[in-house]
Image 1 (tube, one colour):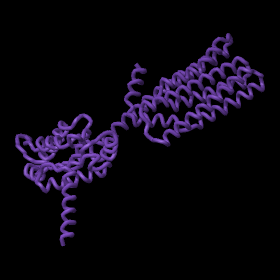
Image 2 (spheres, one colour):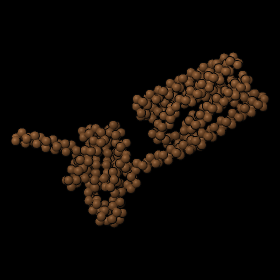
Image 3 (cartoon, helix red, strand yellow):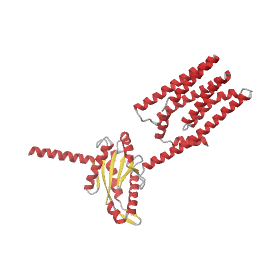
Image 4 (cartoon, one colour):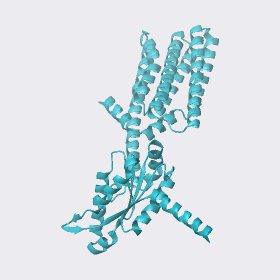
Amino acid sequence: MFFNRMESGRASISDAVYMEVITGLHGTSVPNILAAACLAMVGAITIYETGDMVTAGLTVTGVLVAIVRLVEVFAFRRRLARAPQLGRAEAARWERRYVAGTIVTALILGVFAARSIVLGDALCCVMAVGIGFGFGAGVVARLALRPVAALLDLIAIAAPAAIVTLMQPDLRHVGLGLLILMYVAASFEMVRLSFNASINQITLKRQFEQMSRIDPMTGLANRSVLATDLPAMLAAATIAVHTLDLDRFKEANDRFGHPVGDALLKQVALRLKAIAATHDLVVRMGGDEFVLVQRAGHDAEAVAQRIVQTIGAPYDIDGQTVEIGVSVGIAVAPDDGRTADALLSRSDKALYRAKQNRGGYVLARELRIMDKTASARLVSDGLAA
């Protein structure tokens, strides 16, 4: 049941938080350097005291693995320096490489400790087991959000030494073996607690992130979402920006009262959501202003017609019929702009013209044509004069 929760918890992590986790794993190279330095030092002492070549081989292998892991960390940082954004699939590949490196390191340290126990040098044994315990503590701290990997690391560290000690008939070795197993059990309990706490924090973070993006009255996205989502939508597809302003809303609000005005805004939001396609974005800018970002911008005029007809239909609020209209300004990328700011600015200008026309919709390209015609007329009049 716990593993099921771990898997569901991992899946619930948003892409943004997942990137934070992977970046954090590669955030420092100090533990890897220290583990390699400790292994080299204790290995050198053990070889000097015992002349054991198996220990020499494990030491050299451990240092080489540490170097490879350092190269992998620096490669990840260079990748982020080139382009800060990672896709989830690419991030998962970096995670698999990191986890594989930790498991190999853990296994080397576990076998190293087991070999020290077999050699029988008490001080060398203490140092070797100490490295394993230290690495295990690092696993608990750094891999809490990857509990399966943490468990594999802890088993790789402890299993060789525990097997060797429990195979010895004397009480001291059996006691050491049981101590190692209890350390693993306690460490995994700490991973479990850290995982639960971290998942709860991530859940709260996602809830606060979502709340910060939502208009509390209508349930639509608020204007802050445009700053993050609109550039991404613009990069991925041809879009149309519909900027809306309700006509006669103030009169309805003054006549029927603020509760009716609030209910009216909620119904307008529901109608806009019904018009919007699955991947479109509907935003309440504030007051009675809205923005609908249409991902498929090729039929922008047809969508604008639906907005005018749907929003302009009568509303039944608490038994009262309320009638309003809507003015819409439309800017379509890339003709009306290639940036989010340009599209919003030109749709605002088109909206202003639509309001002068007492409702309906105006395309930004129509304004450009009128501006060009007016400029040509001025030039013509100037030449004629």
